[in-house]
Length: 186
Image (cartoon, rainbow, N blue to C red; front, top):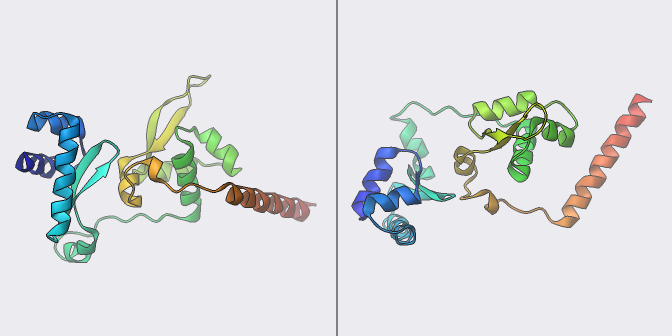
């Protein structure tokens, strides 16, 4: 069964849902998860160059990050994206408020976010996840599996939470910033 799972994950390249792996080995999802988690432990114990990661309710076979420098000597260097403060701010809004429209993002940020959202879509960190049932049917955005891989989390539920004290501090900083802008304009 492990050999079948390994073959499927290797061949697919991308993540494979637990249900599909279960069908491949003719087991239930819970048993399949236990087998894959056992494989994950084995890969880690013997110091292999590959590992299996869990993303939401799916698994993917991938190279360990510590071998990146060795890989780029053989393969062309993968395209790296530049996450500016604006992109990180927009990405964090999407991650914590998803599904969310561009208009809602702009209300939170206070500025147009078309460029930032388009860049995040281009980088495959954000994607359209549906349409809001409202006039104009605006697009709803959410994070992708690439986002989970890039930030090393299995699910958006694993993202760090912001304490109420920090939220209050952020609000105070924002109010001070708005006050400074108003004083400069007057």
